[in-house]
Length: 161
Image 1 (cartoon, helix red, strand yellow):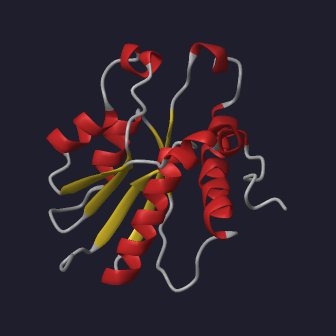
Image 2 (cartoon, rainbow, N blue to C red):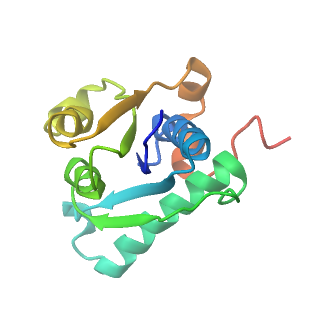
């Protein structure tokens, strides 16, 4: 894709977001674009007693874990500008877009009942409001089976020999 200046990728800790990270890193490398991994965080009812700095640190750690699991750390040879935003995921990702030359990469939704009940799709929000190309990346069946280790930060079974 020519003309891509920034590749923005949402990282939630899911395997779909890891698949999106692989795609985004490839796009950024092919186009000499800046990679902008985004972790959004909010305060939920169960987090009311935790300091905001702790919640922000957990979101930053989520970015680090994603790169550790996918690449063993942040890949060299790319310009990477991580972004941790106190916001719902959809608005955080749309807010990271700077223009039509950007590419927004998302992990495809899992279609779980709980996700639908939370109030709308992040992908739908981004497609309607981003002002740039939006790509959804689906995880393979293998990635789906590996979701629990990825969410907990445990080593992926295929890598932990």
